[in-house]
Amino acid sequence: MADRDARPAVVAIGEVAIELARGKDGRFNLSCGGDTFNTAVYLRRAGIATAFATALGEDPYSEAIVALAEAEGISSEAMLRLPGRLPALTLTDLDARGVQRRFEWQDAAPARELFELPAWPQVAEFIATARTIYFSGITLSLYGNVGLGRLLATLELARKRGAKVAFDCNFRPRAWKGNLGRARTVFMEALKRTDIALPAYDDEAVLWGDPSPEATVERLRAFGVSEIAVKNGPNSVLVALAKEQQHVPVPAAVTPIDASGAGDAFNAAYLAARLTGETSQNAATAGHRLAAEVIRHPGALMPRVDAAVH
Image 1: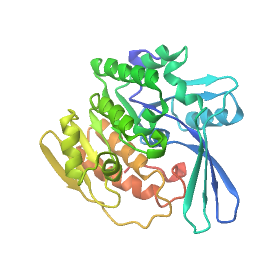
Image 2: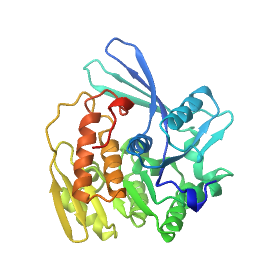
Image 3: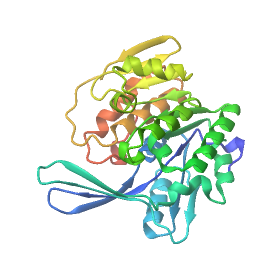
Protein backbone atom coordinates (compact mmCIF):
# COMPACT_ATOMS: atom_id res chain seq x y z
CA MET A 1 0.00 0.00 0.00
CA ALA A 2 0.89 3.70 -0.13
CA ASP A 3 4.14 5.09 1.28
CA ARG A 4 4.45 8.29 3.28
CA ASP A 5 5.39 10.34 0.22
CA ALA A 6 2.15 9.40 -1.52
CA ARG A 7 -0.09 9.64 1.51
CA PRO A 8 -3.67 10.89 1.04
CA ALA A 9 -4.73 14.07 2.79
CA VAL A 10 -7.77 12.26 4.21
CA VAL A 11 -8.72 8.63 4.71
CA ALA A 12 -12.40 8.16 5.54
CA ILE A 13 -13.53 4.90 7.13
CA GLY A 14 -16.97 3.33 7.01
CA GLU A 15 -19.53 1.55 4.91
CA VAL A 16 -21.10 2.11 1.50
CA ALA A 17 -24.58 0.65 1.08
CA ILE A 18 -26.71 0.02 -1.97
CA GLU A 19 -29.73 2.29 -1.56
CA LEU A 20 -33.22 1.79 -2.95
CA ALA A 21 -35.59 4.77 -2.61
CA ARG A 22 -39.23 4.56 -3.70
CA GLY A 23 -40.48 7.70 -5.38
CA LYS A 24 -44.02 9.08 -5.36
CA ASP A 25 -44.66 7.20 -8.62
CA GLY A 26 -43.97 3.92 -6.84
CA ARG A 27 -40.75 3.26 -8.69
CA PHE A 28 -37.44 2.64 -6.97
CA ASN A 29 -34.31 4.65 -7.63
CA LEU A 30 -31.02 2.78 -7.21
CA SER A 31 -27.95 4.54 -5.80
CA CYS A 32 -25.25 3.99 -3.21
CA GLY A 33 -23.92 5.98 -0.30
CA GLY A 34 -23.08 6.17 3.36
CA ASP A 35 -22.30 9.01 5.75
CA THR A 36 -18.50 8.91 5.63
CA PHE A 37 -18.51 7.97 1.94
CA ASN A 38 -20.66 11.01 1.15
CA THR A 39 -18.16 13.19 2.98
CA ALA A 40 -15.29 11.55 1.08
CA VAL A 41 -16.99 12.39 -2.21
CA TYR A 42 -17.42 16.06 -1.33
CA LEU A 43 -13.87 16.28 0.03
CA ARG A 44 -12.50 14.99 -3.26
CA ARG A 45 -14.70 17.38 -5.23
CA ALA A 46 -13.11 20.15 -3.15
CA GLY A 47 -9.70 19.06 -4.43
CA ILE A 48 -8.60 17.15 -1.32
CA ALA A 49 -6.74 13.87 -1.99
CA THR A 50 -9.05 11.34 -0.36
CA ALA A 51 -9.18 7.58 0.14
CA PHE A 52 -11.92 5.38 1.54
CA ALA A 53 -11.39 2.32 3.72
CA THR A 54 -14.05 -0.40 3.75
CA ALA A 55 -14.75 -3.97 2.67
CA LEU A 56 -17.04 -5.05 -0.15
CA GLY A 57 -17.96 -8.15 -2.11
CA GLU A 58 -17.03 -9.03 -5.67
CA ASP A 59 -20.57 -8.74 -7.03
CA PRO A 60 -21.74 -6.23 -9.68
CA TYR A 61 -23.05 -3.83 -7.04
CA SER A 62 -19.76 -3.79 -5.16
CA GLU A 63 -18.10 -3.17 -8.52
CA ALA A 64 -20.43 -0.22 -9.02
CA ILE A 65 -19.41 1.23 -5.65
CA VAL A 66 -15.73 0.97 -6.51
CA ALA A 67 -16.39 2.45 -9.95
CA LEU A 68 -18.21 5.42 -8.40
CA ALA A 69 -15.36 6.02 -5.96
CA GLU A 70 -12.80 5.91 -8.75
CA ALA A 71 -14.93 8.14 -11.00
CA GLU A 72 -14.97 10.70 -8.18
CA GLY A 73 -11.20 10.41 -7.83
CA ILE A 74 -11.31 8.64 -4.46
CA SER A 75 -8.56 6.10 -3.90
CA SER A 76 -9.93 2.56 -3.56
CA GLU A 77 -6.62 1.13 -2.35
CA ALA A 78 -8.06 0.36 1.09
CA MET A 79 -11.36 -1.04 -0.22
CA LEU A 80 -10.97 -4.76 0.39
CA ARG A 81 -12.94 -7.31 -1.67
CA LEU A 82 -14.45 -10.54 -0.31
CA PRO A 83 -15.59 -13.25 -2.75
CA GLY A 84 -19.14 -14.44 -2.23
CA ARG A 85 -20.20 -11.48 -0.11
CA LEU A 86 -22.66 -8.66 -0.78
CA PRO A 87 -22.69 -5.02 0.39
CA ALA A 88 -25.28 -3.63 2.77
CA LEU A 89 -28.71 -2.76 1.38
CA THR A 90 -31.09 -0.01 2.52
CA LEU A 91 -34.60 0.78 1.34
CA THR A 92 -36.62 3.92 1.99
CA ASP A 93 -40.26 4.57 1.20
CA LEU A 94 -43.29 6.34 2.66
CA ASP A 95 -45.89 4.81 4.94
CA ALA A 96 -49.65 5.38 4.54
CA ARG A 97 -49.34 8.74 6.31
CA GLY A 98 -46.57 9.92 4.02
CA VAL A 99 -43.87 9.56 6.66
CA GLN A 100 -40.52 8.28 5.43
CA ARG A 101 -39.42 4.91 6.76
CA ARG A 102 -36.14 3.08 6.34
CA PHE A 103 -35.30 -0.61 6.22
CA GLU A 104 -31.76 -1.97 6.43
CA TRP A 105 -30.04 -5.27 5.64
CA GLN A 106 -26.55 -4.77 7.06
CA ASP A 107 -25.65 -7.45 9.58
CA ALA A 108 -23.82 -9.64 7.04
CA ALA A 109 -22.13 -6.79 5.15
CA PRO A 110 -18.36 -7.27 4.76
CA ALA A 111 -17.60 -3.71 5.92
CA ARG A 112 -18.25 -4.94 9.46
CA GLU A 113 -15.21 -7.21 9.26
CA LEU A 114 -12.72 -4.67 7.92
CA PHE A 115 -10.43 -4.85 10.96
CA GLU A 116 -10.75 -8.63 11.35
CA LEU A 117 -9.80 -9.69 7.83
CA PRO A 118 -6.34 -11.13 7.08
CA ALA A 119 -5.35 -7.90 5.30
CA TRP A 120 -6.35 -5.61 8.17
CA PRO A 121 -2.73 -4.75 9.12
CA GLN A 122 -2.12 -3.41 5.61
CA VAL A 123 -5.35 -1.39 5.77
CA ALA A 124 -4.36 -0.01 9.17
CA GLU A 125 -0.92 0.97 7.89
CA PHE A 126 -2.52 2.73 4.92
CA ILE A 127 -4.93 4.62 7.18
CA ALA A 128 -2.04 5.67 9.40
CA THR A 129 -0.28 7.38 6.47
CA ALA A 130 -3.04 10.01 6.15
CA ARG A 131 -2.78 13.60 7.31
CA THR A 132 -6.37 13.37 8.57
CA ILE A 133 -8.47 10.33 9.45
CA TYR A 134 -12.24 10.74 9.33
CA PHE A 135 -14.90 8.42 10.73
CA SER A 136 -18.27 8.59 12.46
CA GLY A 137 -20.45 7.06 15.12
CA ILE A 138 -21.99 4.94 12.38
CA THR A 139 -18.49 3.67 11.55
CA LEU A 140 -18.02 2.66 15.20
CA SER A 141 -21.36 0.82 15.24
CA LEU A 142 -20.13 -1.53 12.50
CA TYR A 143 -17.43 -3.28 14.50
CA GLY A 144 -17.25 -5.79 17.32
CA ASN A 145 -14.82 -5.43 20.18
CA VAL A 146 -11.85 -6.82 18.24
CA GLY A 147 -12.43 -4.50 15.32
CA LEU A 148 -12.92 -1.50 17.57
CA GLY A 149 -9.71 -2.22 19.44
CA ARG A 150 -7.76 -2.40 16.21
CA LEU A 151 -9.34 0.80 14.87
CA LEU A 152 -8.50 2.68 18.07
CA ALA A 153 -4.93 1.36 17.96
CA THR A 154 -4.67 2.57 14.35
CA LEU A 155 -5.81 6.04 15.38
CA GLU A 156 -3.18 6.14 18.12
CA LEU A 157 -0.45 5.12 15.67
CA ALA A 158 -1.56 7.75 13.17
CA ARG A 159 -1.62 10.51 15.80
CA LYS A 160 1.90 9.60 16.87
CA ARG A 161 2.91 10.12 13.24
CA GLY A 162 1.33 13.58 13.22
CA ALA A 163 -2.12 12.84 11.81
CA LYS A 164 -5.28 14.51 13.04
CA VAL A 165 -8.41 12.52 13.78
CA ALA A 166 -11.80 13.97 12.82
CA PHE A 167 -14.93 12.38 14.26
CA ASP A 168 -18.58 13.02 13.41
CA CYS A 169 -20.39 11.67 16.46
CA ASN A 170 -23.33 10.70 14.16
CA PHE A 171 -25.42 8.62 16.58
CA ARG A 172 -28.13 6.30 15.28
CA PRO A 173 -29.86 4.34 18.09
CA ARG A 174 -30.93 1.55 15.72
CA ALA A 175 -27.32 0.88 14.76
CA TRP A 176 -26.52 0.24 18.44
CA LYS A 177 -29.62 -1.94 18.92
CA GLY A 178 -30.73 0.38 21.70
CA ASN A 179 -27.64 -0.28 23.84
CA LEU A 180 -26.88 3.29 24.88
CA GLY A 181 -24.38 2.15 27.51
CA ARG A 182 -22.19 0.43 24.96
CA ALA A 183 -22.53 3.37 22.56
CA ARG A 184 -21.42 5.82 25.24
CA THR A 185 -18.45 3.64 26.22
CA VAL A 186 -17.27 3.29 22.62
CA PHE A 187 -17.79 6.98 21.89
CA MET A 188 -15.75 7.95 24.94
CA GLU A 189 -12.83 5.84 23.74
CA ALA A 190 -13.07 7.42 20.30
CA LEU A 191 -13.23 10.95 21.74
CA LYS A 192 -10.04 10.37 23.72
CA ARG A 193 -8.34 9.98 20.34
CA THR A 194 -10.13 12.83 18.53
CA ASP A 195 -8.65 16.18 17.46
CA ILE A 196 -11.63 17.58 15.53
CA ALA A 197 -15.21 16.78 16.61
CA LEU A 198 -18.09 17.51 14.23
CA PRO A 199 -21.22 16.48 16.16
CA ALA A 200 -24.85 17.31 15.48
CA TYR A 201 -26.48 18.75 18.56
CA ASP A 202 -29.70 16.73 18.25
CA ASP A 203 -27.64 13.49 18.32
CA GLU A 204 -25.72 14.67 21.40
CA ALA A 205 -28.96 15.51 23.18
CA VAL A 206 -30.26 11.98 22.59
CA LEU A 207 -27.07 10.12 23.53
CA TRP A 208 -25.78 12.32 26.36
CA GLY A 209 -28.71 14.50 27.38
CA ASP A 210 -26.84 17.72 26.55
CA PRO A 211 -29.15 20.69 27.22
CA SER A 212 -27.41 23.00 24.73
CA PRO A 213 -24.63 23.13 22.10
CA GLU A 214 -22.52 24.92 24.71
CA ALA A 215 -22.88 21.91 26.99
CA THR A 216 -21.76 19.66 24.14
CA VAL A 217 -18.64 21.79 23.71
CA GLU A 218 -17.78 21.59 27.40
CA ARG A 219 -18.23 17.82 27.48
CA LEU A 220 -16.05 17.30 24.41
CA ARG A 221 -13.38 19.62 25.77
CA ALA A 222 -13.23 17.41 28.86
CA PHE A 223 -12.05 14.59 26.58
CA GLY A 224 -9.25 16.78 25.25
CA VAL A 225 -10.82 17.54 21.87
CA SER A 226 -9.09 20.69 20.64
CA GLU A 227 -11.44 21.72 17.80
CA ILE A 228 -15.22 21.40 17.84
CA ALA A 229 -17.99 22.40 15.45
CA VAL A 230 -21.47 21.60 16.77
CA LYS A 231 -24.03 21.51 13.97
CA ASN A 232 -27.54 22.57 14.98
CA GLY A 233 -29.80 21.98 11.99
CA PRO A 234 -30.90 25.24 10.32
CA ASN A 235 -29.45 27.23 13.22
CA SER A 236 -25.90 28.45 13.69
CA VAL A 237 -22.91 26.18 14.16
CA LEU A 238 -21.02 26.60 17.43
CA VAL A 239 -17.27 26.53 16.71
CA ALA A 240 -14.85 26.14 19.60
CA LEU A 241 -11.06 26.32 19.60
CA ALA A 242 -8.98 26.33 22.80
CA LYS A 243 -10.98 28.48 25.24
CA GLU A 244 -12.78 30.51 22.58
CA GLN A 245 -16.09 29.73 20.93
CA GLN A 246 -18.29 31.46 18.40
CA HIS A 247 -21.67 30.92 16.77
CA VAL A 248 -21.40 30.97 12.98
CA PRO A 249 -24.84 31.69 11.49
CA VAL A 250 -26.38 30.10 8.42
CA PRO A 251 -25.87 32.64 5.58
CA ALA A 252 -29.45 32.30 4.27
CA ALA A 253 -32.52 30.20 4.99
CA VAL A 254 -33.16 27.40 2.48
CA THR A 255 -36.30 25.34 1.99
CA PRO A 256 -34.98 21.81 1.62
CA ILE A 257 -36.02 19.35 -1.05
CA ASP A 258 -34.19 16.55 0.73
CA ALA A 259 -32.12 17.01 3.89
CA SER A 260 -30.19 13.77 3.33
CA GLY A 261 -26.45 14.25 3.50
CA ALA A 262 -26.51 17.83 4.77
CA GLY A 263 -24.29 17.03 7.74
CA ASP A 264 -21.96 14.93 5.61
CA ALA A 265 -21.54 17.82 3.18
CA PHE A 266 -20.96 20.31 6.00
CA ASN A 267 -18.20 18.10 7.38
CA ALA A 268 -16.52 17.85 3.99
CA ALA A 269 -16.52 21.57 3.35
CA TYR A 270 -15.37 22.31 6.90
CA LEU A 271 -12.46 19.87 6.73
CA ALA A 272 -11.48 20.93 3.22
CA ALA A 273 -11.35 24.56 4.31
CA ARG A 274 -9.29 23.75 7.39
CA LEU A 275 -6.88 21.59 5.38
CA THR A 276 -6.28 24.51 3.02
CA GLY A 277 -5.58 26.99 5.82
CA GLU A 278 -8.93 28.68 6.41
CA THR A 279 -10.06 29.78 9.86
CA SER A 280 -12.61 27.65 11.68
CA GLN A 281 -15.22 30.40 11.24
CA ASN A 282 -14.67 30.51 7.48
CA ALA A 283 -14.70 26.72 7.41
CA ALA A 284 -18.10 26.67 9.15
CA THR A 285 -19.46 29.19 6.64
CA ALA A 286 -18.20 26.98 3.81
CA GLY A 287 -19.93 24.05 5.47
CA HIS A 288 -23.21 25.94 5.66
CA ARG A 289 -23.01 26.86 1.99
CA LEU A 290 -22.32 23.37 0.72
CA ALA A 291 -25.00 21.86 2.95
CA ALA A 292 -27.48 24.43 1.58
CA GLU A 293 -26.65 23.33 -1.96
CA VAL A 294 -27.01 19.65 -1.14
CA ILE A 295 -30.46 19.99 0.43
CA ARG A 296 -31.71 21.66 -2.75
CA HIS A 297 -31.24 18.30 -4.51
CA PRO A 298 -32.78 14.86 -3.94
CA GLY A 299 -30.39 12.39 -2.35
CA ALA A 300 -27.20 12.84 -0.39
CA LEU A 301 -24.92 13.18 -3.43
CA MET A 302 -25.86 15.96 -5.79
CA PRO A 303 -24.76 15.88 -9.44
CA ARG A 304 -21.08 16.61 -9.91
CA VAL A 305 -21.71 19.58 -12.17
CA ASP A 306 -23.38 21.34 -9.22
CA ALA A 307 -20.89 20.24 -6.59
CA ALA A 308 -18.43 22.86 -5.54
CA VAL A 309 -17.22 23.73 -2.07
CA HIS A 310 -17.58 27.49 -1.69
